[in-house]
Length: 417
Image 1 (cartoon, rainbow, N blue to C red):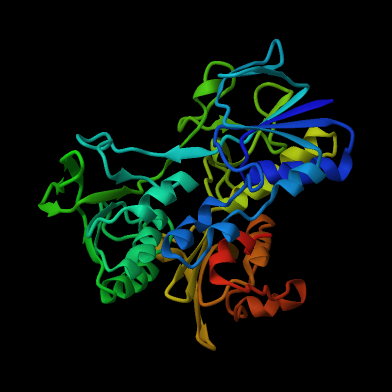
Image 2 (image 1 turned 30 degrees about the vertical axis):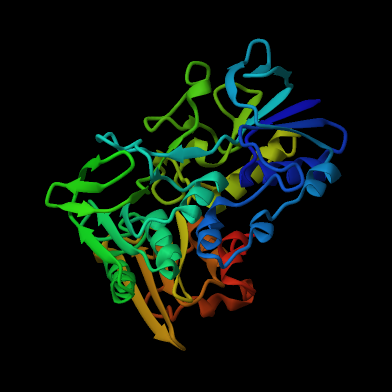
């Protein structure tokens, strides 16, 4: 059997591992548009801010070496952009060649969203998604930087640049930063620390123009901010243009998949940031562009490609943010204050649990991450919890184990391994 994988993300790597667990004979070809050193062809985008900061070396950034692909008997095709998939012919078309497949996995990920405003593509306007992006930001010598977007990418970029003594300004259109990740309560805790470190945060402001080429300023609906570079962190869009005419896409242009990661074409599977799938909490179909879901969906896709039935139990938004040596973790739905059922503080750890009746639907934990797997299990299995007796996840300790995290720069890589 010929298996072709489009993309070299964590979803692809997880799929490769699962495929080879059951099938050592089928050929695997991985096609990636990034041009990287053959000796170090994989890195995790989630740790790029640590590379910019200087906490993580280039050597440690590339966490999977060529030897992995060699040991898995994978044929790497780097620097090739896929332009089409032909399901009737079972062929993947790149700018350089054509690859026949029996089973195809699309793990093409997502790309940074670019605001539709004047100047958005001018010189010294950066995004952060690839190693090349990180190199550009790291080498830029601008003294004044505006970061558009107060989500995880924006906040982590600001923290990464603090050591460089630049004047940093975050512009956020929402009433508070990290609004898609944390509750207002927890976001304001993080914001106070950023402000204390000298980062200016402008909320309820909308960027309307970036002036100068290269950049000279950013105009919002309220003011003009002088700067010499801009980092744009306003979300991502799935990389699905090459299949928009052959696969069923969702309202946000993600590939629609079932619980086996199978698409509308029986021999084509998809995983990671390029898909839209069912939420484990409310059943809605939407993207879950976070690292743990990419890892899980890649594993499920890999198993089903080789005939080992495995079911994905539903998407859950999971995020971890390291803010000045303290971990802020969120999972599930944490934005409805009326759903806050329990707040627990002990041993320097702060925990917030959100409930729908007796069902856990979300949690925020500050200072600890060892119960990530257990929380996902409780949410997905709809396990009933008596709030009057619930004293935190240590009640369930026999079913989990502490997780050792040796280095903060590797935290988001190893957190869900």
